[in-house]
Amino acid sequence: MVERFAFMQAALALYLDAERDLAHSGAWDPACDHWLRDAEAARTALAAALDAVCATGPARAQDRPLRQLARIARVMLLATDEAEFAQAHGLICEFSAVLRCPGSGPIDRHVDEMLAEARRQLAAFAALPDYAPEATAAAKGFRILARVHDRYHLLLRCRTCRRDFPTKLFVLMRGQPLCPHCLAARRAALAAEAGVAFLGPDPDHSAYGHYLAPCGHILRRQFDLIARVARGETGLRCETCHAAREAAEARRFGWQRLGPCPSRRPNYRLYRHRCGHVQRVAQANMLWGQCDCAGCGQSWSARPSFLYLFEIHLPARGPRPARDYLKLGYSAHPVKRHRHQLGLPPEASVAVLRVVAMASGHAACACETALHRQLRRAHPDAVVPRAEFADGINVTREIYRPALRPVIEAALDRIEADAGAGAAAS
Image 1 (cartoon, rainbow, N blue to C red):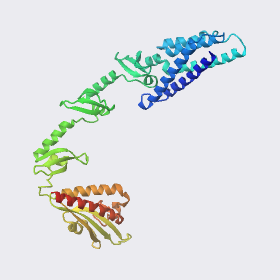
Image 2: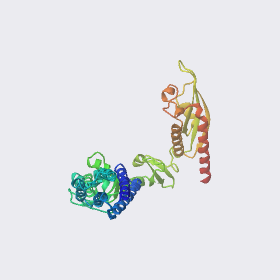
Image 3: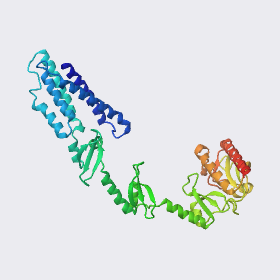
């Protein structure tokens, strides 16, 4: 009996450790499932150890209090509600005189020490928060109806809407359960204030819901956005209807809306002109028809253009020393650009380092913009601040240090090769 009781105490200690681990874990997280499995395994092992002690007949007087305490512990472990658990734990104090050895010999003292340690373990068992859920549920606005699936899942009834829902024991004891029915009612009320109908939450993303717009289309929006719309802080737009309006606007000017911009620029769309040419156009420009086809149009965007790389030398002037810069840009007339449009002083000199022919001004503008963006991101230290060159060059940006020349030349090589391949394919 003593040996089996000692084995039961060891199993009880392991079970307490497993339950304390659960108390400090995110038990709702699938990553913590192994802690739940460990606790269940420890519980099963403890139940088997208690059964072994209870099934063993007392061979001497010192064995009786060991078996009595094991029976109480077994009732506590298998209790199905808070009242049964508390009643079983109260028996330890109520029958404390029975739960000790009557003698004072060495065996009696050893058994009394085992009983005292077991009582301390059972007190720690009773202090675990998961074994007093009814009072916690009442304080948080719910009533426990039953345990479902396993002892870690509960069926709660909301005291507000009187409807039932399952939740995890961990959520009840260490957080605030949310009644899904009350939550859906609040979301439906907010949606009505925002002018849409709430259909339900997004099963794949907890921050999103599905809504029925007045136009009949289904929208997927964040709950926070709907709340802001209800408060009048922002508006709500149906992307299907918006795309249809943009397509109608494009048809007025001979264009077909194909979809969003391939580079994901939010203010641009991809269009096809009646001649078959496809290009990106700013949505605001298409709204007013302020766009020209780069394939068949007559404006600068359709005419051939060039990317250029200039080396500009500004001689010393007053306190400023001589300076050398690189200018990267595009123009239909690169020489005219540096002679008449850069506002250089008469003593400045310009060397045309590179000119790359482009099929259209639209293509040149797109390549130049993308290249500047890449250079600014990859080589911010090579970008010359405007204050440094403002007294000699009449531009606001696109000026670089001479050390960046190999990088720019390599990029222009790639652009020239792509432009040549495109021309050959056409």
